[in-house]
Image (cartoon, rainbow, N blue to C red; front, side, top):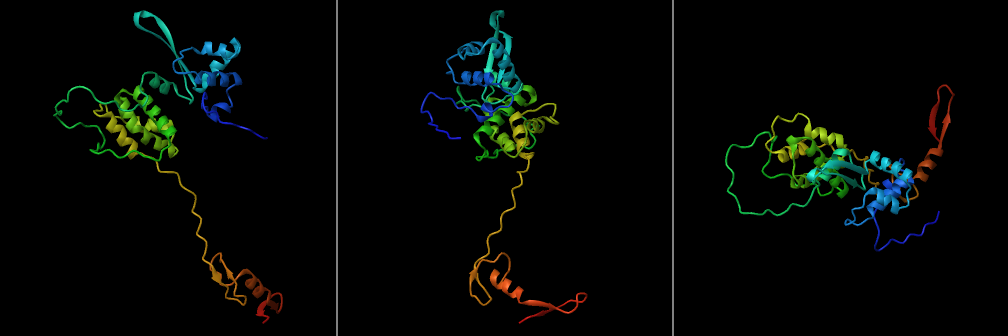
Length: 285
C-alpha cells in the first residue's frame, strides 16, 4: 500500500486515530463527530443541523447520535433557564468523557490559567489552624514536569468530576490546575480514573477545611509506584587478546581467555579411552 500525504497548512482539524479507527462507531458517527469538531467556536449549530450539512439522513443521524452518546463523545442536557424557558445544551468532545466529567466541563470546572486577583488587599486572617488537611505543607511539592499534556488534561477532568460530585472536595479552577499534573502522574504510572477517585474520596472526614491541601496530600502520599522497567542489558566485555596460539583480539561473552576457534581446537584435541562403563578422559597432545 503506497500513500502520498501532504500535511495541510491551514483549514484542518486534528482528529485522533482512536476516533478514526473506533471499533464501535459507524462511518456516519465518525463523520458527524469530525464535522462538528471542525466547525469554528463561533458556530453554535446543533448536531441535527450538522448532520444535514454532512449529508447524513435522519435514521443514520439518530443511530450515529446514539453511538456518540454511548461512547462518551457527545453529551446533552435539557434544563430550564431564566423565565422558565427550557433549552438544550449539547457538547461534543474529541476524547471520551464520563457524564461527571462532561458535567464538570459544562459548569466551568475545566482547569484554566489562574486569573490575577482584583480588589484591595485584605489583612491576614487570624484564628485557629485549619484541621483535616492530612499533613498540609507550607511549600507544596513541585508539579511533575515529565507528564504528557494529554494526561494532565485528563487528570484535571477527573479532579473536576470528583469536585463536582463530592462537595467536601470542592475545588476551584486554580486548585484543579495546580493539581492536574499530580493526577496525570497517577495515570502515567498505570492508575485508572477509578483509582484516582477512590484515593481522593475514601475515608473523608466529615468536614474538610482545605480541600485543595487534602487532595494534594492524598495524591502525593498515595502515589502508586512507577511501573517496573525491563532488566538493563549488561555492558559488553572489553576486548582482550586470545591466550591461545593465534594472538587474535576478541570480545569475550563471559570470562573466556581464548577465542572461539582456539577453544574449539582444544576441545577437538581430546579423545576418550577405556571401557564404556568406566570412561576415562585423556588428552591427545
